[in-house]
Length: 492
Image (cartoon, rainbow, N blue to C red; front, side, top):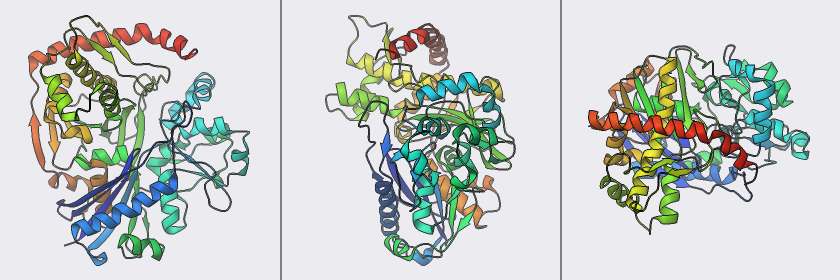
């Protein structure tokens, strides 16, 4: 039997998964690394630490699955979006990997919204500090910008170390804000705004592009054959949809890990006239539309670290279960690090609203969990404006392991929630895309036969009704506070 490795280079960790040709998981490993925030608005990572994490994860998952190099038919890559590294003429980094969470280009993003709002119609991704496009404009005039021979993402950096080729798939390229979705080539207006030449960018390739002839030293470190087909792959969000089998428009993929995202597949590029959603390609017939929230599991981690009294996540969620829907009048806007979709407001701040003397720690935990889900649900309402409403949710991410959390999601969204056995959907999707690229499967839809559903959750209609009324209050509260967020951000 053939085996396939999927690698997911995430924001807080890299994961590697091995699956068989029938989709059975044989091994899963991960390696965490720090997010460097030496000053306000900084969010960087050391690209060499991440590269080492990739090598370590693959070696460990090969050992865990007890496989030899000859057993691996292909390797697929996925990674988080919007990272940016300036590379010198000697191919060494001039910067750290600047992540999506870095907001130093906030002023440039706001200026771009005012001066060139129409560019969204070409690039299909909202104008926001997360974008490499706005980061490049922010860099202009600096010594680093002048010295840079290349501007690449973290996945491009890893692939260059392995193959000494600069290539980027169209999905990661679309997330830069520099790709024209209509032509699937670099957008001339975006290049002019960024002052970046095409030769400073990697060669554009399909997500199924195959690289071979890996550096023998690194191949040996990972336990792989140097000539194993390595598929360039896609972005983590697109691969998460593939990894849970959410390939039709009536299926919604919700991922809640460090951040959260809501996405669905459509069969052609789809742009929101109000500029609230992104659109990324996987293939010529598979396009993902959706939005990402800054505030997923990282918010619960913040609460645990500050006020959790060393509780585990499970014990926090258990405490929340003792409180009824709505946390007895306590509402939480979870914008601890600004917000992306659907508001795209880097100035947004977290708010507990409705506090009274009756509220205890358990109420706050319930409000935090509901606030994270409200943020995700707000993206769903936008997607319903663009495409036919979804009928079910396929869930992934670290928080998807919690049964009570999934039931809360089902109640709040008012939809059936399905939880696959493999919750690391991006890595699974990367392995499935590798299968497709080398001809092990003939169409991507074959993934559906590999998905094994562990749990199903049906919404409680009474609780759903209460949640939808609370969501209206959540929306009104945000709308009324939006101008205050901007004024407050100027001072703090």
